[in-house]
Length: 265
Image 1 (cartoon, rainbow, N blue to C red):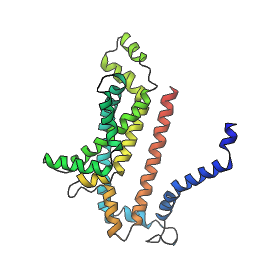
Image 2: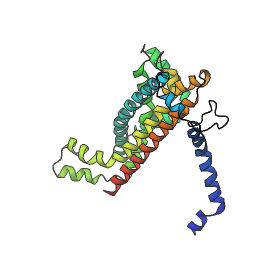
Image 3: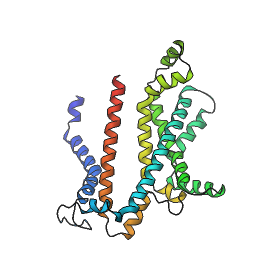
Image 4: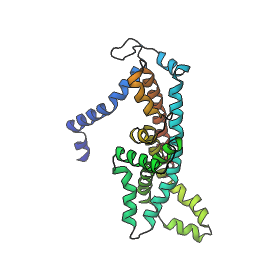
């Protein structure tokens, strides 16, 4: 009965419309990265000129912004994986009166508007007289990335059997060996999923970065925003976005394969 209901024409049509709505703009972006037209309003034939321009010295500023975004994203995701996992473990294992406050701190960066987070962090840095450079942006990204990692690990902890920890301790493993050889491998799919989500959100962030950045520290989203108003060669951004999409899909495929392998073992 359920399979027949799932194959109902209305359900199939709604699914097709949703997929078209989600992926058609991405398809247009990828096609325009090979379009010889500068403005993309019409198709003028296949061309690799935008990829050639992307890898030329003309696009040096774009690569510097991408490098800055990658450094911030990697550092923010790694730090968030560590502290987010610790926060999730504490929330799952210990039951105190402060748990509700702890949960509130975890959910706050997710539910709070980005503009509010950006203004608050900017005022915080100004009050402490902190120079708004690479590390200020990284700290700002860590503040909201921790929450996403914590929630991903919490979901993994729902199926975590605490008896394996007790068994490891009974077999002679100390606290550090138990964490490294038992807890971390079992939580690895959730940690990696949270880290990938944190990295994606960090790379994509615009509003918070806009408020906390200093002069000369334009990440890739800020660089793209400035190029939409000044450059005449926007298809270069389409080419770069296509490469980033390829990298993202490859990363998601690798994470899913690793998750399945972990689950099978």
